[in-house]
Image 1 (cartoon, rainbow, N blue to C red):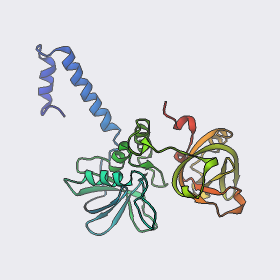
Image 2: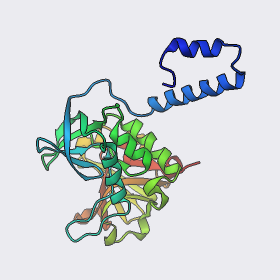
Image 3: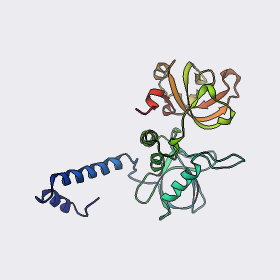
Image 4: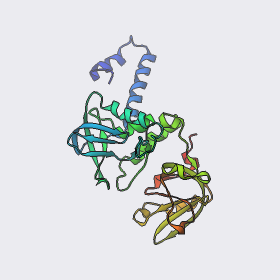
Amino acid sequence: MFFAKKDALKRLFLCPCVRPWVAACIASLLITQSALANTNCPSPNYDETNRIKYIIDGDTLQLKDGRKVRLIGINAPETARDNRAAQPFAAEATNALKALFAQNKSISLVYGNEKFDRYKRLLAHGFTTSGENIQAVLLAQGYAHTITFPPNARFATCYQQQEREARCNKAGLWQKSKSLIAKKLNDTHIGFQLVEGKLKDININKKGIRLNLDNKLTVGIRPDNQSLFDTNTLHKMLDQKIVVRGWLNKNKNAHYYTPYYIRARHPSSIQLISDFTCH
């Protein structure tokens, strides 16, 4: 807030010496500040507050008590490991997370509905002492993609808005990051990707839903996530260009007839190209 007391602000607007354009400018700033706060994915309460021992990368950190926390709802570029080079903007993403805690190592956490991943990391949304949503900040700066893993879908819509604004403003990794073309996929693309292509076919059976993009990529929706997807919406995407996000893998299932596979867990992972494109 620009003024310590509401009365002072009120007197300023009532004072005849204040020109109308000054009052209008201040009002505009206050409205803008309020709007930003409303889109910052806030939480009214937290499950715990702890201290950070170490920042591992752009979406993972270690608490003072030794537990590792995976910031859910986002995926930051991978740092170098296992003889693989760092992805573009991996260092910037890590440094951006470090910068949020340069002055104060205290972090508040909101646990995911599913509290741990297969690596026994705590799954949580993180907040600074000033109430900033860490994931939202990283997305807004363009240092992460959003990705939703049910049942941890809290803030999903807000995170998508933060990413879209960064993408349309070409912030951070969006300066260079583009969706891959399904027809041009190869083994060097293994890992988290955004892939675009024409939806050629939809197959629905007891094993889930399979989407075929340009006979090159299968997008699989397993039975445990199938109820989240509206099949009518998917069928409306037939013969249209779509963008899919997730972890690209070589297809080991001969029945899929495509060399590559991405698992989609949430509807936000599949978009029409017209909805994805910045206008």
